[in-house]
Amino acid sequence: MRKLEGTVYHAARGWLPQLLEELGERDRLDGELVTVLGPRRRARWVRNTWLEPFLLDFESVGEAARLLKDIQRNWAPCPTRLHRRTALVAERLPSLPSKPKRFPFEVPDVPMGAFTLLDEHRLLGSARCSSPFPNGQFDFEEDREGPPSRAYRKLWEALALAGTRPAPGERCLDAGASPGGWTWALAELGAEVLAVDRAALEPRIAAMPGVSAMRHDAFTLKPEDVGPVDWLFSDVICYPPALYAWVEKWLESGLARNFVCTIKMQGAGFDRASTDLFEAIPGSRVLHLWHNRHELTWIKVEGDRGLGSP
Ligand SMILES: C[S@@+](CC[C@H](N)C(=O)[O-])C[C@H]1O[C@@H](n2cnc3c(N)ncnc32)[C@H](O)[C@@H]1O
Image (tube, rainbow, N blue to C red; front, top):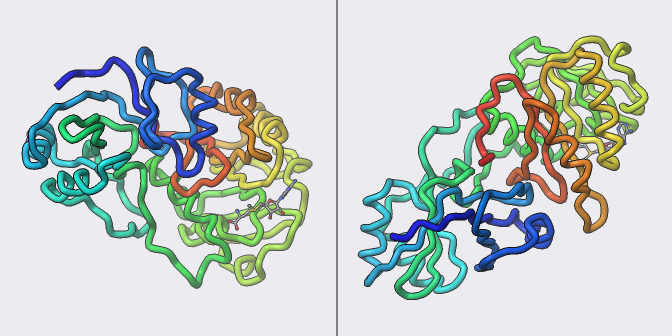
């Protein structure tokens, strides 16, 4: 085994161009895996980061599986070529959890590795990865009747990775709430939710216990008008600087304890300057969730477990 002094970045689904732009120069590109030697770089458009990559030579698929198993139990295959041979190695490894997860759940603190075959007798792997899920991918058991949109899945994911969630009775501001997916998820947890949107909330969501709906521009609502909140959520579609300016007001006011906000990118681009500003806020992080689209999620949460980040 030969250790590589560098990092392998597995691009977020569909966002390889953004990752390549973010990383600049690279040393290898294997499918959606970007290898960069030298110090780790800041990378947000990833589904998983391979933190301790190595090259491993082997004679047979059996030997490849045995050598990986000698290191640890969990290995996610990430085929970039030689798909059949990769599958043959994977078949000889312990199976990985693949059942959709029911929220809330505790993410286990068990290392999840990843590997890809570079040729018939050499693989690139890493026992330590940023994501606790195989290739950063997992699904929730979905509720097809309760929520009016599927946006709640990214909220669930953010809370699962933070390892915490609103407790019953905690006060939440849900900005950009319509039609009500996030509000539904928060009300299901027993939280008190002030749902703010210029558009109407779906009536049956507005009628849930603990929910009050307000039709308003979230950004012209001052923190003092809302009062203290335990959690501030935003899924507002807006330019990232507008969200940042609003979040700054809340931070200055000291009236919100926890934040989970979606940073929506416009067009094909990536607003790196705004993203850097968010990430520079102490005690916070920015990541691309499996359930995110052309957007990133900023999390500033007390007791954040930090799962999903390098
Ligand atoms: C992606 S949707 C939110 C989906 C929602 N989180 C859910 O789970 O169903 C974005 C919302 O932002 C709202 N929005 C856009 N600008 C806004 C503003 N300045 N103030 C409040 N809401 C705004 C839109 O009306 C839209 O409903």
